[in-house]
Length: 471
Ligand SMILES: Cc1ncc(COP(=O)(O)O)c(C=O)c1O
Image (cartoon, rainbow, N blue to C red; front, side):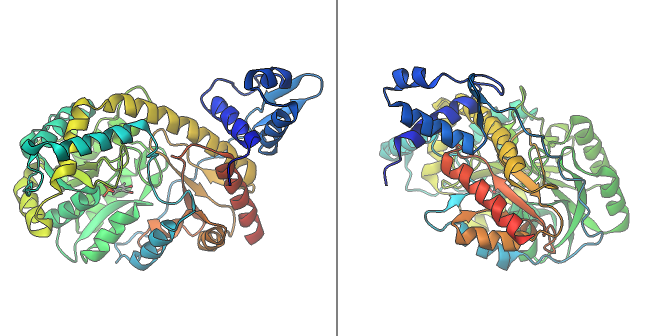
């Protein structure tokens, strides 16, 4: 069904508010002005304003006109997490498979999967470069790009790493099938089945699944939603348990979105040195910070090659090309070999295209646009949750990335909400996916990367109603 004209106008105004053209409390153009400007009838403008009023984004003031609403009270972030204090086997795989497959269903309003906004012009440009790379006979794209992978791509990755304070050598980078493969190879390089890995809690379910499938154990460490894993708890864990390695996402973690302060990163690396432990650093969201400078990677303080830095283009460009990498320090030879025996190579053509794109595609401009869009989307997300979710709801306020972690009040059951929402074709990710033992039963993760539309906003309102119905 074609979108109604008034809904289109309402989406346009919503976007202008999101972009900061109108701030809370500002007066919007009068109905008469909009009629002239847009060439539509007064009733169409009134219907558009009506929609925005329904979603409480704007309000009518008698005899004065329409104004952008003042923000409602901002909910608090969740408190420090309190995971189980002992290492445990992970049991999330079945649940993850169910949720991941359901999220992929057609005509779904997506808040579930951690996908970036792939409607950005940069993606078209990247695809053009992919086509060009395929047509260029010199590229020899039909060949294997054996480990460590395409040299031009490794050079581009090393150049970009300067922004995160790292002096990486292209010769210490291995290209992988996304960041997930990088994480798995790194886990295999530093630990054996039965070994214990210290991780932040809540933690990305891909990490939990990797630990599960490798027969390792997860030791979940209490984590603050703004500053990350507790170093005191980590030290205690190193003293109490035979921890073999740490795996953390210090820049805009999934799902908490925390960014570890620099002093803490430095203290962490000293702690790792003291206990002689390696760190697998997942930096996949590192380029998506909203602030003026990119966070430094912990790897930049690494003096002796104990940090295995992992990342990919899945969150900044697109996940479908499966281009990721690791710079694994002293574990390079082992990783290179593991990569060869695991998947032989990463597809050649995407590596060449991504290398071209990083060199000449306008990647920095693209990142600037995405960061600013995601920041605006975050503010709208927090505002909508605070309007439509019941009292007692808490939500994180990430300074980067595009994921919000929402604590539901009281006895709310995220799995129940997830199933009810799926019936309405709304996807969310339920909290139990993010812990080894399916804790976080009253949490959900929301992806706010796509542009807000009337449909997405109404879906949040519906989620709020479904949640209230379950309490
Ligand atoms: C923190 C984190 N690490 C790794 C991955 C996997 O990334 P990729 O798609 O590049 O394998 C994800 C994807 O959601 C993620 O959020």
